[in-house]
Amino acid sequence: AERELISASEAVVKATEAAVEAADTKPTSIAEAVKASKSALTAADTAAKAEAEARAALERSKAAKKAVEAAAEEEYKAAAAEVVIADAGRGLTNKRGAERIFRREMGEPEFWQEKNERAPLTPVLSQTQEEQISRQVQIPLDQTPEYNPQHILSPEFAGVSSYEREIKNQREEVEQRLIRLKNDPNASDQEINLAEEDLKTLDYLYENYYIGMNVFRTAKGGRDKLRV
Image (cartoon, rainbow, N blue to C red; front, side, top):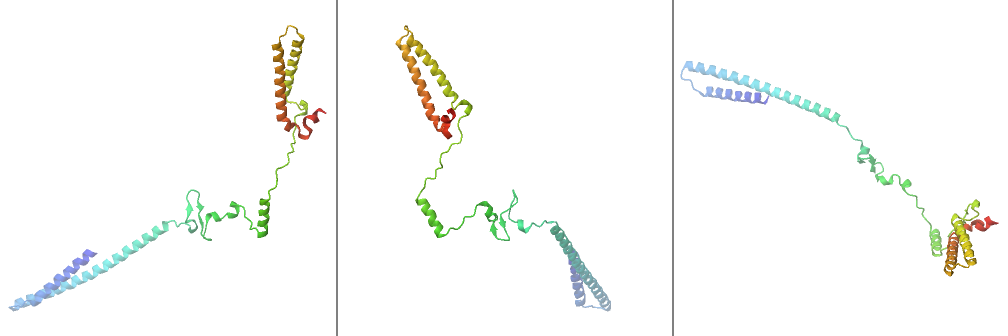
């Protein structure tokens, strides 16, 4: 359309120039005057036709421009309809878990949304309560619970462990050996001394174990209660 408009404008200019040139030419005879008048009429007709074509080209250009604008508007509307509008409330989210970082309606951060569940509420103490707590801290009390064991050794073992039974059995064997050695005139003093040392060692083992375990056996009477 623009090319047609330019061509029509050029044709109008050329026809106008030709008409002006024909009007300025002075005829020297009647024949030349008739010829000049015909040329002027032809140039005027050509200029009129060129002007009409220029107007038609201008109208076509306007129509084409409107069509292009309408097509662009339709394309824009179609593209806008395809765009998915994000939810305004999910503008700031954690992409990993879709967690809301801000609560928009309250304008506060996420960590305040469940503040009553995240930590226990701290009560506001009065001046009297604070002074009472301060006095309790300044005057410490022994709050150690009383030792009150509830369990003893099984009754079927008469309050004696297998360790103690084995020590007693070995001690009886050593006592019998010591008695036999003392009654044997051929026994040496070294053998008798070794037997006596074995008895002392077994007595030490029994006493150490008894003292270490006595705290458990004295519960509710412990060993003495089982042996009654």
